Image 1 (tube, helix red, strand yellow):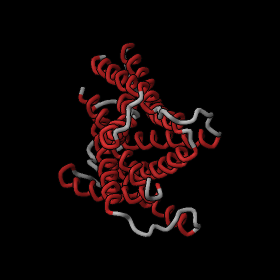
Image 2 (image 1 turned 135 degrees about the vertical axis):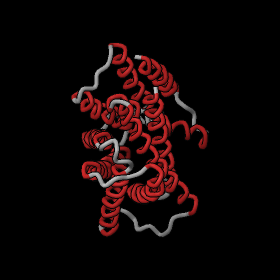
Image 3 (image 1 turned 30 degrees about the horizontal axis):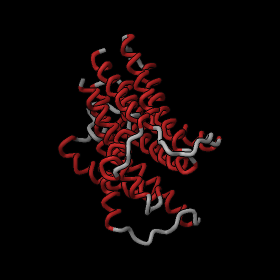
Image 4 (image 1 turned 90 degrees about the horizontal axis):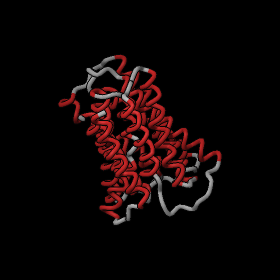
Length: 284
C-alpha cells in the first residue's frame, strides 16, 4: 500500500512541477525554464541532505550522472515534440513509453505479479493514455519527427527512473543531487550555445511572478525525484514507474484549481480508472 501512495505522490508532484514549468514557459524559453528550475531544485536537494543524507557511494554517483544525462535528453525531446504537436497524441505517447521502458527492465530483473496484478497494471497504462489526452487539439496525425521526439522523451524519462532505481538504497540523495546538477549543467551549456547561434532569444530579465513559477517548478520536480526514490526502495520498479506515468494528472488538477480549466470527460474516466486499478493493485 505504501508503494501505491508514494507512486501516486510521485506522479502528482511531477505533474505539479510541469504545471508551473508551463506557466513560466509562456514568457520564457523552455530550455531556460528547465535549466533555472534545475538549479533551483539542486539547491533544494542540498538543503534536504542533512535530514535525508547522501553518501559518496561510487555506484550512486555513476547512476546519478547517467540519470542527469538522460534527464537533459528527455526534457529536450519532450519540449520539442510538444512544440511540433499534436499534443493530444504525443503527450500520452511519451507518458506511456516512460512507463513501459522501466517496466520491461523491472520484469527482466524479476518483478512478478498475480493475474489480478497484471490486469491492474494494464488498466493503469490505459488510464495513462486517457489522463494524458489533451482535448481541443486539431485531429491530425503527428509527423515522423514528432513521433520520434515523443518516443525519445518517453525513453529518456524511463531511463531516468531506471537509473534512480539502480542507485544503492543506502546512498541517500546522492543520485538525485547528481541528476539535478548534471541535467541543469548540460541544459545550461545547450542554452548558451543556442543563444549564441540565435536559436533562443537572449533573456532580458525575468519578471518576479515568473521567478516564483521557476522556483516552484524546481522544488516540485526535485521533490518528485525524492518521492520516486523512496517508492522504488519499498516497491518494485515496474509498479512505481507505471504509477509515475500518471504525471499529467497533477497538471490537470492544478489547471483546474488555478486556471479554472475544465477536466475533459475522457480525462475524468482516466482518473477514475487509475484510482480503481491502483486499489486493485494494492491488494493483488
